[in-house]
Image 1 (cartoon, rainbow, N blue to C red):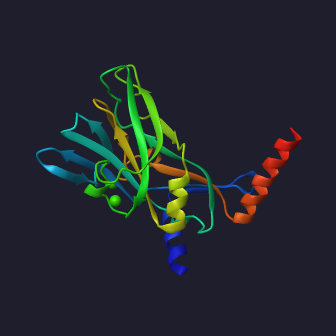
Image 2: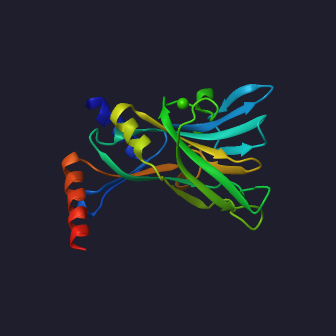
Image 3: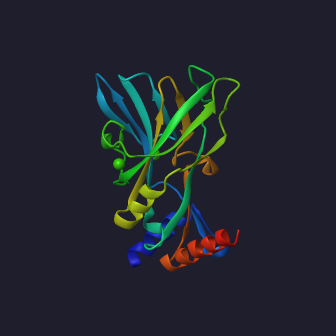
Length: 220
Ligand SMILES: [Ca+2]
Ligand SMILES: [Ca+2]
């Protein structure tokens, strides 16, 4: 337990813990590590994890660069029931795409706390979390805009909390799209990525919450 608390304290300095109504807690978790993983048909896989920004782009099957964030979920209570989650990232450059809109997918996977070639879409497909369409080009999304990506599926996050430690989120650009966001190495603290998780700390609390919702529905 000492180790668990020690790790939690270290990460929570940069995050925020809030208790909302109904016993629901919300915690912002910064990545343990982040970076980009490139596949090049001639050079193979390469990793950059110390830059102050992360780029996801896709120039066709011979050159695909994915942005990856890995979060240590041991800062959450071990028996937490996750109710919702989103990834908060901030653009470091204008989003570009061949058309008016940039289509970007987000995938989640059980990770290992370091950025490697295995984090690329080719090697660890992961579970679909969200897809977003951003206005691209000079009149689209400029640098310095905070993007909040709500997850459609929290099951992979819960699975890592129950049976693992590091949760990976990967940004996958579709062909022609270029997305630059600030990394944890960014000098702008407010622009660094954060995983926001809302949860109830005890299974019993979730049962009460679900029971209450069912009761309200019956009355309606
Ligand atoms: Ca990094
Ligand atoms: Ca990894």
